[in-house]
Amino acid sequence: MANTTAKKSPGRPKSVQPTQAAPKAAPLDYSVKKVINPETTKIYEIVKGGGIICRIPSEVIVFDPVEKSTVSLRYCPNERSIVRDEQSQYAVREHVVFRDKMLAVDYTKPTLIEFLDRHPDNVANGGRLFKEIDKAKTAEEELDREFAMHEAVSMIRNKEIDELLPVAMSLGISINQKNSEIKRELLRDAKSNPARFISLFDNPQVKCRSAVMQAREFQILKVSSGAVSWYDTNRQIVSVPVGSDPIDVAVRFFMTEKGASTYEKVLEELNNI
Image 1: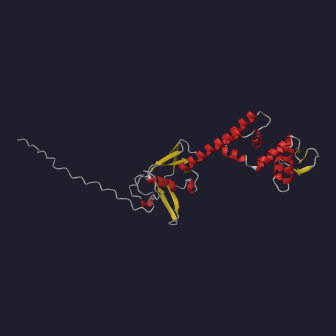
Image 2: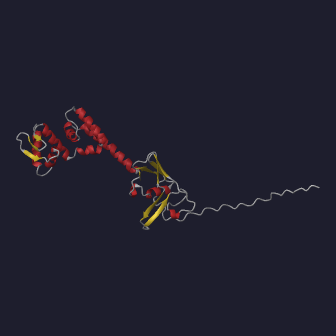
Image 3: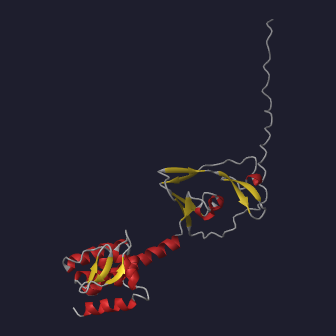
């Protein structure tokens, strides 16, 4: 009789031990201390360079002024702390990447915000690589610029040409052209830097420079490389040092107490024309 080998019953499978849960991260001493408005997003930008993609170091060493010692910071999205010594053995470091020089961080990523805020390459910490964009400040500055531009344009539109000529001359704009052409050039400058343009109207040196240049044009003053003199008598008013601009020398002299009376005479001659 042939021997038959009895098949063994598969029996019960061995029980599988459940995977041990990862230990909780250590209590925080360096938790996010800033209260972030849930309706806002922090935006950071590369200050210089960067290109399309720019990775910044995701593990750095900084000085802790409280502990008076250095501390290693590391960005790990699965950890509650950015301090390396407080992270668990399951910590996974992740790259911090700027794209097109920008990085927007939602309030739901507080550890990334804290890491960026404490990063030594942050301009706020003395770094030179990136900085946070202050959206409120940026909006305010943009609004101020828009108002200044409108004010500058209104000044060109509403002021008499005689009031515009000193500013034009200080900007190097030729006044030997049509008024419309002078205003066009003034408008170009006003749009490029409206705050500076507005300030020129209240600058006494601008008015003095214009007076000197007009006095030269109307042959009240003789301006040469060696001296500034009265045109009719050739009497010297102020000498010009070698290599100096005679107009600058005359303006500086007229703005002093010693040259104030001479400046008044120049203005009087101009008014009599």
